[in-house]
Length: 130
Image 1 (cartoon, rainbow, N blue to C red):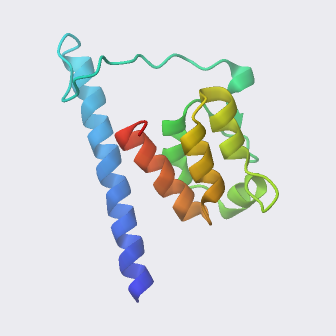
Image 2 (image 1 turned 90 degrees about the vertical axis):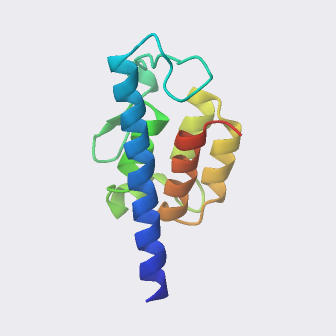
Image 3 (image 1 turned 90 degrees about the horizontal axis):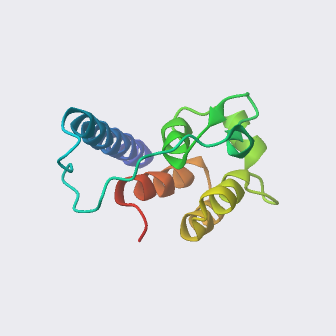
């Protein structure tokens, strides 16, 4: 029963993070001159070229780390286990190679399972670089 409480807490944290991100995006669209809660200048997300996008085993294309974080919660276990094994971690390689995010890539390599990968991705999306 203890694991159920932990899992529910993880799920509600993920929902909260994505609701905050959606509110920020909505605020940026409504009022582009004013920054939303952040003192940093808003960085426009540019479309990633097709050759640098991550293609899951199922065929789904990922364009950025935020999409990976959103999809990680709903990803099939077969997709995850295809890309993450004891010998390789395709997600960490993509994050390191395309986005040059060394710290996040190291966290993804150290993650024991999909839940821990998801937590590392959510932390990165919500709080940015540390």
